[in-house]
Image (cartoon, rainbow over all chains, first blue to last red; front, side, top):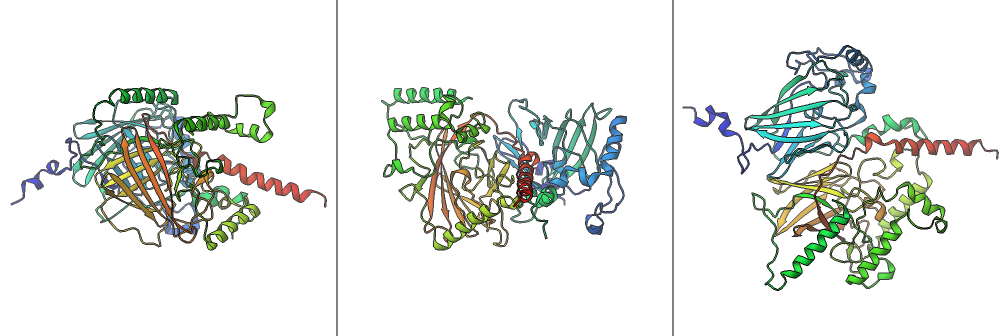
Length: 250
Length: 333
């Protein structure tokens, strides 16, 4: 006989004392969205010497309806971005990833949730977000990770992200946006170890209509796992400042 | 909330305390989280006018009286004010300080609320203890290296200029000239401290798990926490080493790979956490030493400080140095 709990995954969702879903844990996606949100085949590494190590892995897209509805002028910029992606992708320089890209960077992130607070710490670049669960507030100005106002709709955490600057990309394929970007994220628990993540992307300067991506977030189950310090800043100093050294690095 | 309104609020709070002083005092007890920990959550600042080490003029004086503190704060605020007053009495160095004027700084308008005369509380003289011979050697080498190679490459610059680590994040968490803001979150099994500088998040496990292997070195080290009564105690080891100070503008002393920092957070009131950190680095310092600051509650959320993304300073420093070298080389001998 199958235990009743196994038949009803919702009953196994961990909950906070106030009954809201408990998202505490270390999570990560398992897809190739950071390489390209759209369905893509494998591609050669942008640096020949990197061979298969930095080749683009093939993957099915994460976009509902498969296409990003670029306005014509924006579609041209995306193509240019793609052709210069190694130089132009902010990830190359260890810049903060923005939202939603932070979610599907190929690194873990930790949700720190209490009765008063909801914080997300990402391993990549030590990026972090504070989800304001109180009265929605306006951001003082634009920022890389934006300004997140959250609320619950049943078991779904809905995060309205505004105040994003125009400096981040969605992936390594040159998919981009303007500073009119507005992202609405939805985190819905589907069992104890999986969250369904959705992000609706709206930017009338870049896209002809809002579009949506979706993917599961998987809980890391490794014992004693912790986010490691991945301050990639120091790993990009040679790239950014190497030409200004007194003597070239040997 | 502005500092002025904070000051007014504290005056009102003191008046209220005076009014109820007739009734037997009931010890303030912090609220508890759902899993029973004293609640440290919220946004906090450790901005302070209190000097890091005790200035010679206060030798032998561990605490200010109320009047002495007021006079000291007034003097400090005047010293920090680079804008008002008579410019004819200011030298070029004073005027240059206006590159960062009062709008930048976040030193608060008060000393620590224990009325101590220095952040260093142990040794009792309020001064960092002597370095060991090995520590002194490393310290002198670091200074000579910096003097000889101020900007050969980014590695010659302090960690903060490289946007790698600010002393605000620590540990130990020390006030710097600006953005001395923190947020603490207590989720089941963890205490997380986010420093606004530079979005540095320290997620501290409380479950007694072992430290990372000693081969893994991190700029913020590797932290493990536990509760001792009402006090959160965090031990941090496995620090990355370079020959620059972890203590920022307040103190240019170095530490090495043997650094062990023990921090103690005790909430003593609705708006106060007393923070103590002991710096134990036996290769550099002849004995451990301890600093104490007070964290004051703030109402505003902290904001993103994206340092690396806007680090034009590093381009300026390195290209300026190269330009100077070029000028020097082209001068007739």
